[in-house]
View (cartoon, rainbow over the protein chains, first blue to last red):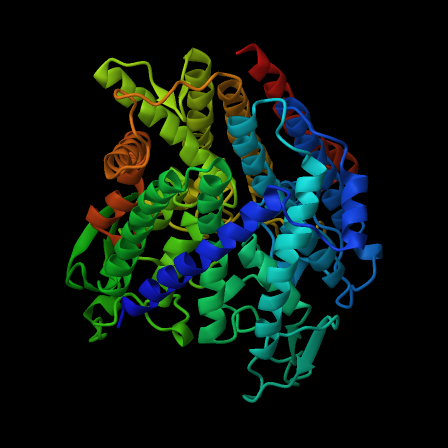
Length: 604
Length: 31
């Protein structure tokens, strides 16, 4: 039964992705004829066919405006309406972090929506960015497909693409999903909060006069917030607890829909890639490779978390003592007393799991949400068993297991170019893809697109792990603390947004009397990482596709490597796994593996 | 945080990194 949930989710999504991909290709090929009003707006937006550079500039300018707009709305939050709980201004670095994070589809959160945002900000910053930022990655993929197919001068019009993606794709699908969420009990209101008296008297503590404190429950338009949070692979939570909160994920059915919803567009886009290039068999090979990787990460996560006990409770007998080198010299630490308790471990690691959805739902969601770079969470990733935590980290490190909408397929394209190049070198032929020769320029751009991701993860991780910026922020010492830092930058660089947590990186509202000591550094570092890791891996592949699109296609011959066979799939799979392992195995050894094999699970 | 100091720094950093991406786009043509 443990495997039934992930298997059903994957199968349902794959089956839905097939008709959806046909619809997406139909829309993006401009074959759909909208009603007169929508067609007239579309005509006004159509500035004509753009070349690859004009398209990319439009994309970057649009994103810059989105950053400015988001920062501005957050800065004006205290004076804007729908602020029933009188939220103040966020700290400037938090606003920069949030604006960059939301406008790039990352949704890494150094703030908590229910604590720091008014409903106005939730709607006009978060939901607005859910639509816009999700569409931008989609458009980038459309531009690459057209550059490969039609040449660098005919990549379409960015503004028309944005319109089509938002109005003909996200809006109708999101509307249908929101109706289901509404029926399942998700709140849909502009009311800021409900104040209630707890059933257990004084459950929230007492006031100075001894009277029991009331509980304030934050409310808002969650039923329209959630669909695009998931469908757009955004992942930013209305509540701090994200999809573990009963308002963001009320029932097992909503959990199922949220899981399917976040994987739907990334899967469909792979097949759309094949349909638009008229290479559907090739797309199915790519789809299969991604599916194998996704099944691998889900199985890994569920096996090591749901089917294995929490090593903090079982790894050693309670009598064991270990020497730990701490900040103030060596300490002898006895393992926690809980190790000797007769805790039933047959249901696996239940720490920080939302058991309303079943014991495997947390580990399943954890793997899926990072593979498609959504970032929504329904359990605390910090509490995953150490080895199980390798699964979400791997999803972010490879960043092409379906990946975010559009960008996942773009990242896969980079791996594909490198794989084809290596295979060509091995057999002594000039490497080519789609009949186009891969030359030095293409390889340089592919390597930039590939390497910027590990550079943006490993560089800042090393810097923060070695300095007070990281050491003062981590809640756990040793290998687990290192994992917390690694995960944060992996999430930022992969534009994922999920948090391992266990880091003091929140300043929050500007008048916060006790902010996390190094939160400024975390905010600003993630601004840089998120932005560079978002746009360099988009710009380089667009330039690469434009260069390839300008070349004449070679005729298919006996020596041409076929790209629609299982052999090609193995080549692609090997390229992804070998490059991924070379880049990230050392950091995995220092973090989760060291924690698992080390003497004290979870760093003591 | 002192708003007069940190708003220009944080906002400026965001814009600066975005401008860097424009610069990379220009550089791509020369690769």
